[in-house]
Image 1: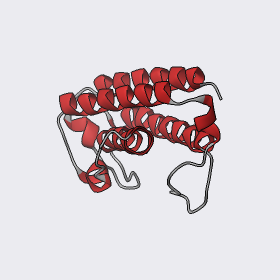
Image 2 (image 1 turned 90 degrees about the vertical axis):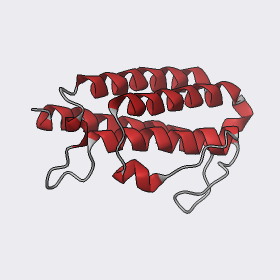
Image 3 (image 1 turned 135 degrees about the vertical axis):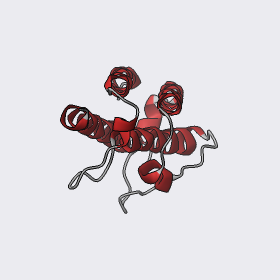
Image 4 (image 1 turned 45 degrees about the horizontal axis):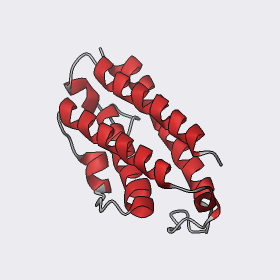
Length: 147
């Protein structure tokens, strides 16, 4: 696997995530939850930042990050803090990917979040797909609810 490909894809989508957050007309609209919509865009942003800081930073790069998944989905911060968390996570992703060797990708990922062993490569691709999925939800949330 080529770390540069993942690095470029994450960088592109982190830029889009920041853009989506800034495009909300008001800070309050980031936190709207309507019936049938379980997560606000703000909470999805917190989740993406926390998820990557944990699974890449803490697990693969020993960053010391302590995840608070409950806060990711139920907490609230101002827009500047949300952007800071996203930018910190972006930096963590870049540093972690820069430190991986080609051999690291074929190693077994240290955790089993799905209950089975998988390669680091497999899990990194999953993490990128997960990021992209939630980024699409944020875009849709903004267009639907940011009035």
